[in-house]
Amino acid sequence: MKLISTSKSPLKKGIACLAFSPDGKMICATAIDDSHLTAVYKFDPKKDKLKLLSKKKSGGAVVLETVWTGKDTFVTVGPKVYMYW
Image (cartoon, rainbow, N blue to C red; front, side, top):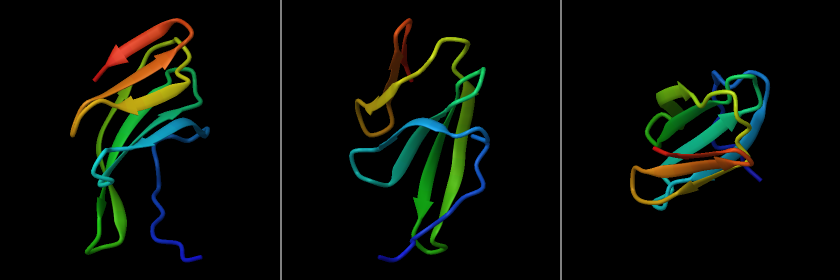
């Protein structure tokens, strides 16, 4: 097994959920922290690195799953939240 990439992430306390975009070029991850920070990364194959594209606080509600709904849109859901990005 070969490690392809690592990244210093703004998601410090850990990751609650993670999903790859349909084309496999982007990753969306939501943190296990009080603000449930959601971050989107793009993989740069030339540098073998993940580049942070965007990050935003999801709010106080717990996020348990992320699902891509299109090339650049996704949904985060939890027991008391549904957010379309």
